[in-house]
Image 1 (spheres, rainbow, N blue to C red):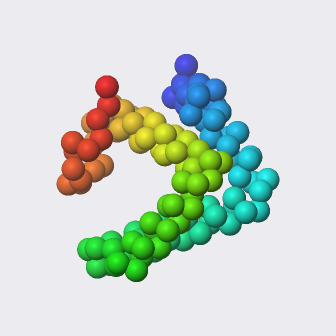
Image 2: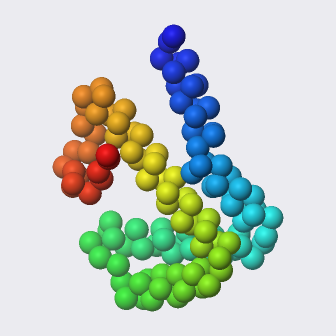
Image 3: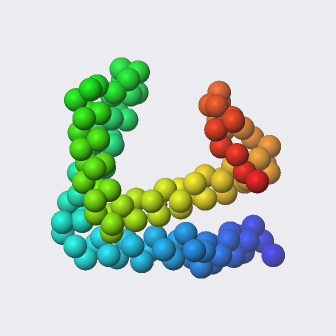
Length: 122
């Protein structure tokens, strides 16, 4: 079996995983509702704004933190969007774990100084 066959096998397993199945289901729910899409889009914009400030200035401004808290409160009150974001985060953790396993297996450390204790895999 070639490495590509193994990759296809992994892809099939991923498609059936609870994390992906749930994320796909919740994604459809978001896609079907314009208010949810707008809310999620607003969240993404503020998230990127915060990230950009963090990278450029080393910290996030009080104004952006206030926006982030406000959108967080709105999202927390909306179970569909909140569930989607939580599901997306679970998938992201799983994906990062898979990449770490693969990186560790080939013996190349791609973190280049990142805190190695923040991601732990059982």
